[in-house]
Image (cartoon, rainbow, N blue to C red; front, side, top):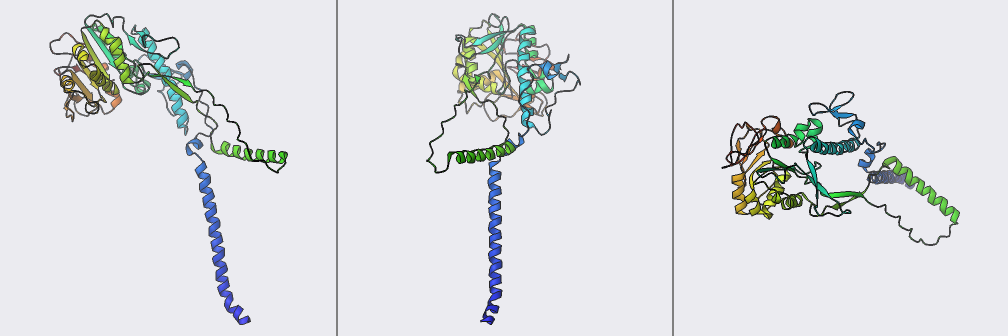
Length: 415
């Protein structure tokens, strides 16, 4: 019997080792599963927000300690340095919110320039709006509706930019002449144009959502535990949950909002069509000229789809810059395509010399080089040099500048 036990001992030992290893492996797997479960509960984006400062920012340029100098450049009032995006390291969301807050102030600043420097006035949309509905607006020069000769209509691209702006980034990082439409407006007025500045991105009123009422607790099954013991248990579990979320989640929450669309102006396309019907078509000018950047070009083509004959009868020339239109996707007619070939030019980002003809896959307006690789600069660096000129066949007097290096047959615009 002893010999049998002695012979069996190695086998039992091996079995014990195997069982111990299996138990250890099971324990490791349980730890791994628990760790994965913990990590799955941690929102890494929220973890990065921990200890994030509150989203409370200055309301004026002065409070931001920034101002535009005599060259139209945004500079810190104490250091003279350009705007710094990363005001706080490793807090990208906070820096972005700060940038957006500054952008809203700059939007109001540009509105003031349009009104005080360019002597333009707001026209509110819809024209028959009631007191309790959201509204938008455009800007008109004093003679925008009464000028009998010529009218210039400016349409910006999509995004956060509002009336009078081409690109917020250029206003902040370069200067007002690069990022705003003001050089175009001033030059047009000097050359006898009425001017309309559209506002295609002001499509809704954003309001704070009402606070949601807390749902009533669902009835629970009766328990044999004493009420006092049950309350202590619930408090303990609640405390654990709070500690967990306080450690791994940021208690700061952004305000929830909802958007109320502006009647008949709920999109860029709707806005351009509405302004055409209620302002451009009623203007006295015999010759209408349009400049549209990026998505503004798409909105113009959509206008042609909706009001083809009116546009052909009133518009002499169209200058597009990095236009986002697509005649196939927008299903434009053959007549519209032929008209665009004769009356439109699209200046696009390119490394080729200025006005170099570029190949196009679509049979619409000719594409020429704008001598830049940065899309947001295509429509903006032009007015610093030679200004803007439209020259149309049979209308040589429709000019916005005195010099033009080359003369495409329908439209001439120089950077």
